[in-house]
Image (cartoon, rainbow, N blue to C red; front, side, top):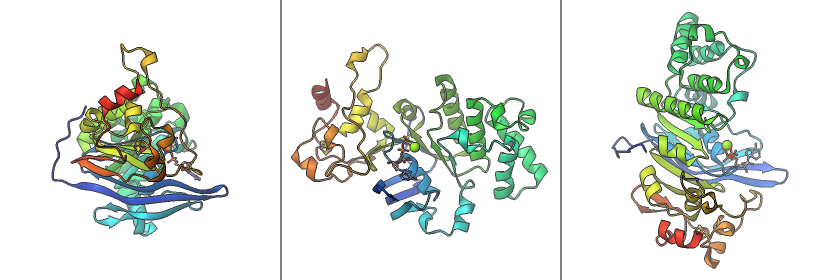
Length: 341
Ligand SMILES: Nc1ncnc2c1ncn2[C@@H]1O[C@H](COP(=O)(O)OP(=O)(O)OP(=O)(O)O)[C@@H](O)[C@H]1O
Ligand code: SF4
Ligand SMILES: [Mg+2]
């Protein structure tokens, strides 16, 4: 686990009450519904949650890449260096995208253009953002490919995406994302499509680049193991809301929200019998028909009548730990164990 030393450097990015909706033929989908998040300078925030809970939409909102229509940014602010990104002109956003804030997308295989060499794709970003000439950009591209661990970069620079393995393509995506030494790197499930050994290598690479470049990172993952390895803070998202947030040490030691507790006890631990694994009952709710009250109540072991009516706000229970649950002061891993096993 990465040790986090609180510092006075403050947040580099602050999301305040962000709401992103999709106006579809079937109805209004509230993909992100009033979330607050902070990324502290030089640290890594892990964003965790089941499929469809709004992780990618949160990331895409930061870069203002929500397709519109049907997407609508219905409210909130995203403050970066004192400016609200949601209010910037498209021209100003172009300067920030890929330059100051860059993203490794969830689908690396579809994010690379098959008809251009990987070298041309990295060079394009360098020429555009850093205003470098062609030959200087060529030299920088070779250096970046080397940095992300591509062997023989002078030769590989001429390869097309189809000539590379999945792990290498992911390294190319990282090379593109860091080519302009961004202040913030957003990595949306950067290792999901890769096998376990390559996953570990890619995470090591991201971490060593962070140490070298001092970037702040927002990493989306389904995997709490990834969070434990790489993140300093973690936000647990459920059905368009953040339900728990805190430092990784605190959340791993003292998880409070029943959903977080369910996630932790559904991880296989070496030596423990599979039968002892807890499976969160039920399914992710349909975004067109979220339940009233706390959206987790139909799946929650602790739900009472109040949960079905009133949605709990997210509140601080101590410094660096926030929870959205009516019974946050009472529920903990010991209470959980008695109930869930
Ligand atoms: N273009 C779109 N049109 C309509 N609804 C959308 C669109 N993009 C996303 N959504 C909806 O927004 C919600 C959040 O989607 P999002 O992609 O953020 O989920 P996610 O947490 O990243 O899931 P996953 O883990 O599967 O990647 C989902 O209900 C999804 O169906
Ligand atoms: S508010 Fe109620 S339903 Fe929601 S997580 Fe807490 S106990 Fe469960
Ligand atoms: Mg996603």
